[in-house]
Image (cartoon, rainbow, N blue to C red; front, side, top):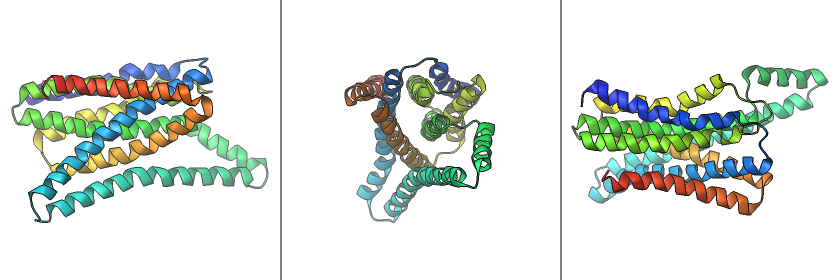
Length: 277
């Protein structure tokens, strides 16, 4: 398989994320439906969290079993640091945003409130849109690592494995589009196609970039860092989506949505396993 063919297939795997994005423009969505979509997205992300953590921890455990040459300590440091940054950077950013909002509404007169609302209208970032961007960012980090796997398989002349990975990751990405846009369903202001396209680029383009990097450069440490960053950011988003579900609907409905999301995640993973990848 030539480099151009590998990159083209990697791009296709990333583009499938756009299949689930139109759900973000759904109108007149009931709170129960919105909660079910959010909880389904939560289930998908819970699977992705398990997936990226297991792939990040695997090389660290192998290094521990193989000897005491210092490699384990280095990889464990990368794993811990990446996870910390991926999770806590979003937590502190959220705290910073809430403090800004609080200061704006407690400022002298209505001008402060108007200024805050004008600024956020300018950037077009409602809480639902910020959450969608956080989800797309976490998925993008995960997809970069998937792209590395595609590129490295092709570089090692394992063509059949590379093709199976592309198909499997493409199916994964199709469900991830639903996860990205679930918070936007029923939002007061319908997102534009341009904003949905931006979310698709954030979440899907890293698959192509990872394929490009993996085609020419194989590095275990880089893979661990991106998996750890993805795990931390995905965990943050899962916590946020669980809060959304608890507010909008009953625990029973939310649980069914989470189970559906987990089923979709594991179903696509089993396709990879059944294909021998």
